[in-house]
Image (tube, rainbow, N blue to C red; front, side, top):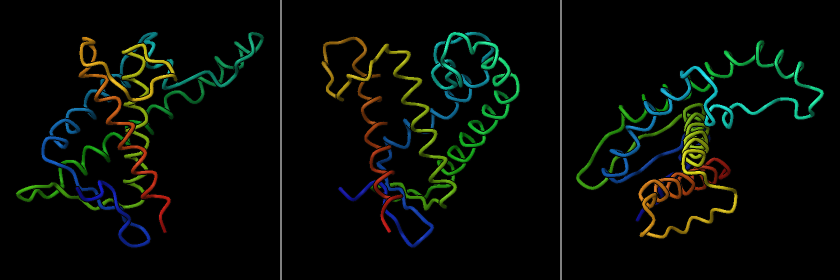
Amino acid sequence: MPATFKRVGRDRVRVRLGHDEVAVLRDLPGQLRAVLTEEGDDPVNRRLFPPAYLEPGDAERDAEYRRLMHDELVQAKLANVELVAGTLAKGSPSARRWTVDLTEEEATAWLGVLNDLRLALGVRLEITEDFDGQVDDTDPRAPAMHLLAYLGWLEEHLLEALAAT
């Protein structure tokens, strides 16, 4: 199997995926967009936007930080979602693979979205940092846990491609 992410030139990363992988990935930006635009005290949003100040006496400072920065942080994440959705729409399929070349900005957006998706899914599955990617197929959460492991695998390979010079 060819590399999923490969640096091509100084400022481009080529993505090659199977058609089934692309089908799964195309649905995810919309799901993340929905989570990011939800109002209320959702555990996923608490994970995606952790407190800036952790000390109990800093609650007021943290509230001020959220008031000033939260909308801007949400808009930045939404912009990344749109970049990823756009690249998923413009890829070119062949008989066996789907390919798209990403700019550095698009690759960085992919990295952020993959990470946000992993965090969101981990919260929904109540996964801790101890998750090693091994999945018990008898667990009713197995399909979602396989997706979580796959997203982590993609993120790792994209990081390797971005680090290559």
